[in-house]
View 1 (cartoon, rainbow, N blue to C red):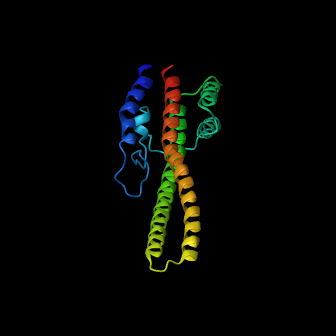
View 2 (cartoon, rainbow, N blue to C red):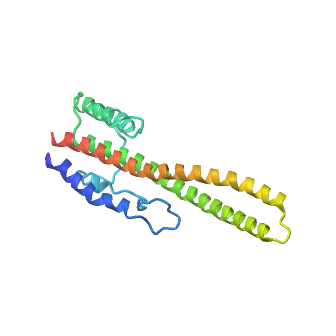
View 3 (cartoon, helix red, strand yellow):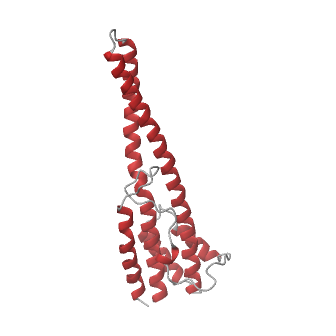
Length: 202
């Protein structure tokens, strides 16, 4: 069973280029392709016949799943926590690992979907601001071309335009970081899946 983590890696390599292909969605500003919901089956091949059932997790598995879903917990810390749980009494079985992965997947996938919705709203606001900046530039051009330019009005618009452009640039930088976050969550989920799968193979 040790080959399964490597098999998962091969699947991930084939899927990853989708995120570099860009998107034709006008509301999606990221270079990564928009994939609203991840597939648990791609990362985790161990679900059994009852994988669709929702059962309450045992305290130890619930605590571990909650810990693994926290982004502030490094992958090294996550692996250490998995090792401690795996070597505990009683030891974790396949059903426990299934439950842990399912819970972590649900948490991170939901968080990722919320982030992507936020990115869409953020991008729409950026688009509106870009339209406003364009309109202000056009107004400045019209006022400047007038027979008797209203320089007071031009100065006022230019001051407002300068402020809006700074805000727009700052938000654009934030948007670049935001676009990377869903991919980082996916990579974390994949890494955790590998850690858990390796224990099943032990």
